[in-house]
Length: 574
Ligand SMILES: NC(=O)NCCC(=O)O
Ligand SMILES: [Zn+2]
Image (cartoon, rainbow, N blue to C red):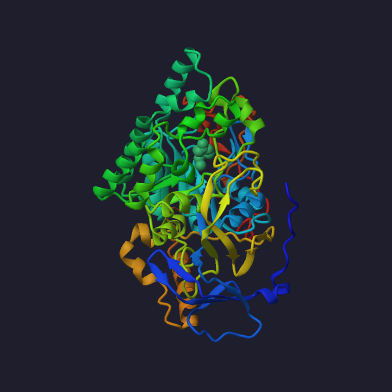
């Protein structure tokens, strides 16, 4: 593990505050421009030819290169405690690796520990991440149980803490039942949030696992057998049906099979407001890796929903990306070392689920999508950056190269190649599912908030340089698509006007955070129940009968004082 570089105060970095990228081709999702980009104080200030800029400005010559919006990875799990292990890429190492691969923003999933309220979970994630992140980040909030308290705290997270997305699980011990999903989606819709689902039928998986284990199938190959395609597609369909009842926009995380994508396609054709995310793992490798004779290799490919054994799946998923059946590529980076994967040596259900991808996502998608001719560079930008920015309401501040947007930019060399390997990657994990893959398309410079972090191959990540970015409610892309065109910077040369426009949009979002339920009395806050948290290792997360909500009795807890909530305390108690 490398030593973190300590944060350099911004006022000491003035020589780095001005940058011009010349002679490149700017690729946005909506077109290509041969113009220069001038950046000052972390913001794009001018775009055009023959720009008049201050002397002493650093120039990057991007001749023959593409100038892309920095990647946005909307699905990471850094330092995530899961299945008896903790993912080894933390917010420092994970975001550093992200930047080295051309990703300039990540959205991680805050996941409450047993007994932890979603508000406390949010504060704890901020405390973990804020001083470590090398690039900007935002958070989705996971809802591992449903209660009136969760419902109230969702509103607080939306109104006061810049959260606009909530993830529900349809599998694992902490899955919600259909009625709970209905209520959670309904609350998302009222708040102007985006509902996300991990779509697999948890009850069927439990029964399949019992059957497989009783037959002596205990190796990693049992993982996919317990969670076949129809188990995924059934859940996708059910989630779409439930979301439609309450008119809630739905984002299906990690769509891993052709069947699931087809269900999503049908829902979209029927007018459902649903979006699908593929994983870079699913676009580049398949479930046959889980049948490898080496346990560590096979277990290294275990994630849920599983990679599919049907070898035509990766290509089919890339075609779905091209056809806009799927809109976003995430990594679901949730990395466990070989030794951690050994937890499941004798029982595939105990293999910590998760793979790498945050560092290699951009190059692998380029290789499998653009280099093969399936998608063009504009679509590449859409699926690796802009669509995530639109869905989670970061656009046009993020995901776009325009005047007034944040200067998160990648100078991309489409002709250079690199070979992926765990020996050379920047991640903490000791395994790489893309080992040996040669990728055309390499980031040569990566600019994060106006600062050149990857500089001709030299990575100069700064721990804590990234910021937490609010994701305001009611993203126009999902709630009012007709408004979206108005948001796009016009690049008409009026810098101050463009910056003002983008900031105005943010202000508008903040004003839209209206109060939907009465203010909480202080006594409704949460603290771990008197029974105490269940010790790790006693829980079997595959067991659908286990319920965190029953176990913790979350609504009857006394209040606690919040420890230094980020952004200051608006009141002493929650
Ligand atoms: N996907 C996976 O197997 N691990 C990460 C946690 C999750 O997203 O379900
Ligand atoms: Zn995930």
